Image (tube, rainbow, N blue to C red; front, top):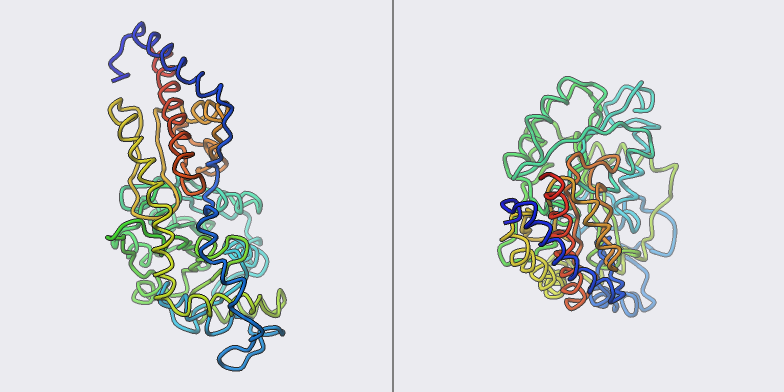
Amino acid sequence: MYKDMSKEQLVREKEKIRSVYDQYKAMGLKLDMSRGKPAPKQLDLTEDMLLHCLDGEFISENGIDCRNYGVLDGIYEAKRLFMPMLGVGRYEIIVGGNSSLCMMYDSIARAMLLGVLGGKKPWSKNDRVKFLCPAPGYDRHFAICESMGIEMITVPYRADGPDMDMIEDLVKKDEEIKGIWCVPMYSNPTGITYSDEVVKRFAALKPKADDFRIFWDNAYCVHHLTDTPDRLLNILDECKKTGNENMVYIFTSTSKISFPGGGLAVLAASEANINFIKDQMTYQTIGYDKLNQLRHARFFKDYEGVQAHMKKHRKIIAPKFETVLKMLDEEIAPLNIGEWHKPHGGYFISFDGLDYTAKRTVQLCKDAGVVLTDAGATFPYGKDPRDRNIRIAPTFPTVDELRKAMEIFCTSVKLAAVEQLENQK
């Protein structure tokens, strides 16, 4: 293992790896693994939605002309796709536009400008607004906070979810903490699904702020990669048991089910929250794209249709995850220079290299034609305190492209590790 090598051995190993790396670099490859994008073959699965799902029939099953104004919270057929997916009722859900990220942004913006149910004033009227940010996490969550001047507090991950001891302690003491970001199932990027205990502890939080909200981004709730998928406890049900039913906002979308640019996004919450939010939204829109909602409802038909469809996605992307994990097991594990979780679903693999090697690894990959998410992007303010986390997004390239990209990645990890260890000798 590299850690056991002398400085002279590390120098020789570095020269050997550098020779291999230079050969890859000379190939002039251009491979992009920077974002969790569905591959073209995945998008082809829903092509018929654009061609034949309406065919001149624009009236919903309860007589709504979907070409016209109205129905702020979405048509019932579309709600019916998501209610069993999220475990919520008809009056606990809003079907919006194409982007759950947009719905999350709008929810933060409304809280800042107008406040939330039960709050005494808008968040922005406080001297400071703080958010808890489990990390590694989703960079766009953190970007929303940064864009609005919300101070972020990093919370470390454990094997079964965020550090709940830290979260419980912080929220009960600090009234300036107004929320927390969560990706509870196949988390972006760690792939971890929160345990029952973690979900129950979230539901039982006793925040000092009366306007505290859990932003529960359940983006990957149907994105399974195995026959034995993870199971996530229903956060809204648990919050109802503790009298905290107004504390959570749940989000999801079909961005990686139908079309990232033309899917459906959803906000679910208690009925009281939904009514409060609808009153605020009345000034923002008269209604979202009901034709797109009708298309989705007719294409998938019901939640069982969504589940059947996701098995087709799995056939396309599961071999890609297997390729990445196999190469990490073969090339990196024996050298003890990296750690990773093997997810049962989702869109990412989170890789932790040796301390202070992530930026170097990402740069080496880029110079050899493989673009990754910037090192540090999975932490608030883009600052990974140990400079070791890299998010791998396997879904977009073909298996052959991915294999070549991972050869370069593994070589870059080795080179960065040897350089770092040599410097320490």
